[in-house]
Image (cartoon, rainbow, N blue to C red; front, side, top):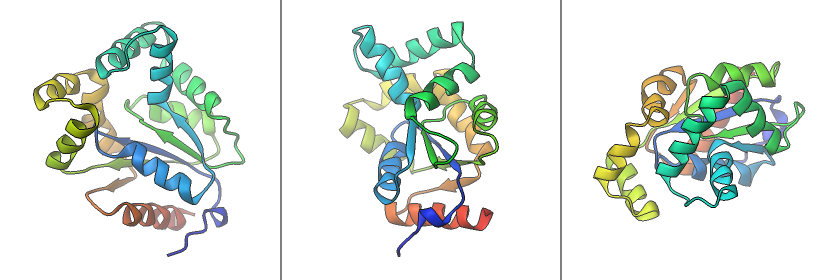
Length: 187
């Protein structure tokens, strides 16, 4: 099915999900269909680690996140991440890795009057663990330690309940079609 994203009014899509759910893969697939601006929270924190010559791993990112929030608020974070994306209010925006409920009103405030749709990627636990083991060589017991961090536990507890659309285990093209049809119906 051919989707014409240009026919849709401007919007922003915030993508969330647990570690290994396929958020970035979903974003990449969307970018194959349309020239979205992409604002990535993960890329922002990876760059902070890189600038300090720190290793690129989840524990470091979580520590940097804690340090960032000890000095800044969610509006500061969202502003920095969106500014780095090059987005303007005339374009469509994808936000990769929304992990805190507090980022939702911060994003909505900054992008106003552009509507924000929050999408939660929800895959089976077995599939998620298989992906993480392959991608990160991360054992399930270490994964559980990372998932107790506030940024991870908030994803499931708060973000999923705020989601406008939940996309479960499905073919990637079907997931994109589900999102496109959802947004088209909202306009």
